[in-house]
Length: 174
Image (tube, rainbow, N blue to C red; front, side, top):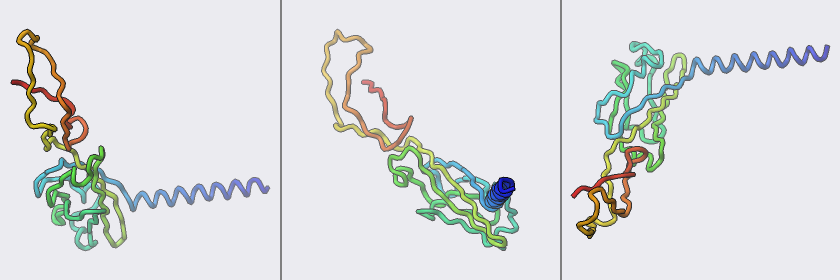
């Protein structure tokens, strides 16, 4: 008898947990977009209203608003068409430094009924930084008898870009 009461209580707790989780998921969602750094003002990021399942006609009456964690002027939503766009230049290195991952986290809030959505916009690195060598000119002297494909080590260059597009390798021709 005591065992079945415990089991019923555990089942009740499990059902309550599932119900709370389901209601949380319907009122809160996560949407992911990506945008290249240095994108110009007005560049398309995503159809945020459509992706969140909101009707365009209800954006203004439901007090649709976007809050950014950090700099709030980088992205904006056009309330007439529900499109998320670049509002001002995004410099990935300024925003995230040398971090491998860089994202802008937004919270979208609509009222009547209150809903909060989490939106992540990944800022993709572009090859916008030239490699910088410690010395501008490097003189290399070698004999005429050296093979055509000879290699000469150079001091490493630094590059503010990350990942595959950072200054990892290069060729000098002369």
